[in-house]
Amino acid sequence: MCILVFASRFCERFPFILIGNRDEQLGRGTRHLRYDVRTGLIWAIDQLAGGSWMGIEPRSGRFAILTNCRRAAAAPLTRGSDDTSISDAAAPARTSDKGATKETPQRSHQVTGDWRGAAPLSHIRDYTTVVPVRPELRDPARPDAKTLSYDPPSSRGTIVKDFLLDGELPRETAGDSFPCPPHSPLTPPFYAGYNLLTSDTLRTVSATSSSSPSSPAVAYTTNRYGAQYRCPVTPGEVHVLQNSFLDNTLGEPISARLRERFESALQEVVMPLSESAAAAYSVTDVATKLADACLCDRHHFDIAQMMKNGETADAPAAAAAAAALNTTIHSTNPLLGFSAVEMQEFFGRDQSAASTSSSPSAPLHLSDGGAALLEMHLQASVLKTPLGGYGTRVQSMVLVERVAVTGAAAAEGAPPYAEVIYFCQRDISFSGEEQKHCVGAPWIVFRVDADGSFARISAGT
Image (cartoon, rainbow, N blue to C red; front, side):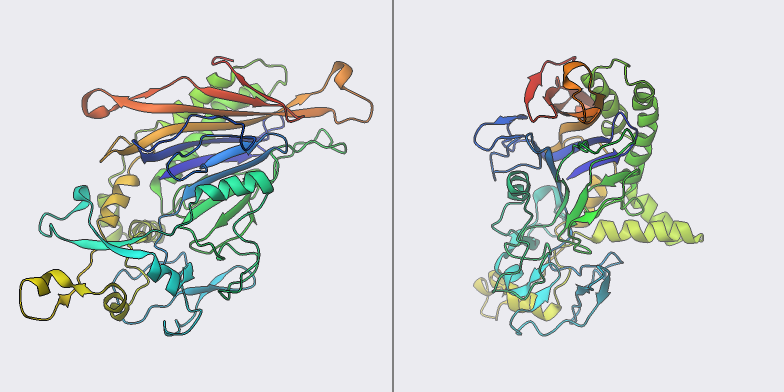
């Protein structure tokens, strides 16, 4: 799980500011932020799957950052409430030409090219397996419970790599194997759920630039929910992204809280610097203040109580918020989208029963694998203390500063401004009783200049 918040066109001096937490298995091999000589990218490489969750191509200023979307692959591509029961009729959503989603009847799964949620049903079936429920999520009354796990072969980290190197997103034209629309995230290769923010360049200055505020153009892509593709993100606003869809502040309490804290921190930390282009500042000081105020927030939401209160809420707004929260909590149920008949046909029957008796194998009863319980834990706090070896591990900041060009560099007809990109990351660790004390390592900072040159600068700069 990751969470990030950003503002574009916040002020003339700082046209783009982004901060975020990366939450993952703490034992997963990940290198520190660095310049990768093989690719020419500035990023932190995932040593397990390759690629990365975020990075910058310094020459072009191209930028990408990805969060996982935990919604089940077979679930309908809608943002409404889900029926978490397993029925004999599964109805995925299709996307209209205008990008809105609408429900359409599901064809029989025997039909060639049949889709279920985010991919062809045949693909989802091939890469979904029956697995034991994780020990920390297991119901003591059902120690042998099993659930489903969708694990496609394509790594989401390569999406970031491909975009940074070539400006390409997952195949922009449909292949011959599946009847998928062009210019869509629903094309092979098929990935686990993801949300992606991209910018063709974080630089906005050109030879025709004026002194008026501008900001990098940011686009949003996801292969879940509405399956949006390169959807422009509205500038001049604060946006937040977690693991469902962009700006889901109604269904994600910590997203709403992070946005509020970021808006306050911008006024307290960044606004004083924006009032004077000559005001000196330390990049790491800004990163630390924003991270400490926003990303290290430990406010705890009692999700179970919030859902319970929502059941009896009279006010329409409270009822809507409770319904949205309930949808988020149950959106990761791996059984979503499959009918009862398909569950038995695709994933078989319980062979363990047949091995101990002469009777035929019993129906295989699957659970959500503790998905709702895990989601309630993840939605409780912005900062994740370790649980089962999982928690917040890395904090990042991307800051674009617009500076006046003076002296010999101010050639006649040249832009009066240039933009500097600061890319900062630090590791997070926990100590003390119940690991409640958060410790931030020194920031790793790269400065990328307007001509594409870059340098790692010392902490405290």
